[in-house]
Amino acid sequence: MLPPLRLNILSLIVLAACSFSSAGGRVADIDRSGRSIQLDGFLIDWNQKNRHLWNGSKTWYWDAVNTPEGVAGYFHNPAVKCSLWTFYADVRNLASRPWQMRVSDPATVKNGFFCSNRIKKDSLQVITFEWIIPWDSVAVDSTGSYTMHLAGNSVCGDTLQPFLLTGRVSSCKNRSSLPPRFAERLILIAVLLSFFVILQIKIRKKTRRREWPRR
Image (cartoon, one colour):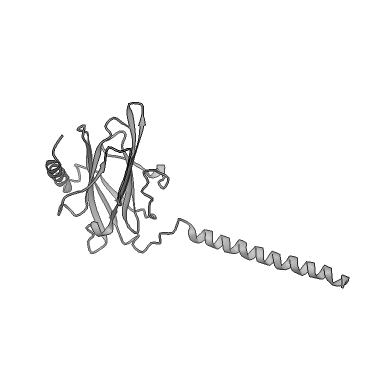
């Protein structure tokens, strides 16, 4: 296993080699916006139909969205032998070391920016890795656009090919963190409440009319 410093340098070299070669890697544009994720290592907040197969892999999947807090996403593998992985995100166009996110020894690992969950399945592991990179850590140009490379490797020597992630922060910076279709639900509640109030008023009027002859 390579020492951490050499591993960082190697990762930078790999990322740099792919930075200016569109033929050498995949480019994915993130045009979807979403609300804050829970960072609990589970995929409740993610729609399976939107996931992508990691370029060059048969078992690693990923998805990402722009949120008010930052770029958020997940990596998932339903059957992997090696459980110790490190993912890298070049968030400042090779101006600094890559953002590192590690799937460590404990079954569930969580910090402020990522959470991993591992489930043992016979001799294999099911790995779910959720992450968010805050906007103040991402290099954004004057138009609100950003680019970052994502890559990964394991202590067993497995590697995931780097690919380029692009997107725009302007589409979600001012986006509300309320749940999807919250406004529609609020309007429906208001309509139902109004209907209930009107119904109660009519019932009271009818009750009063019936009581008048008795008096």
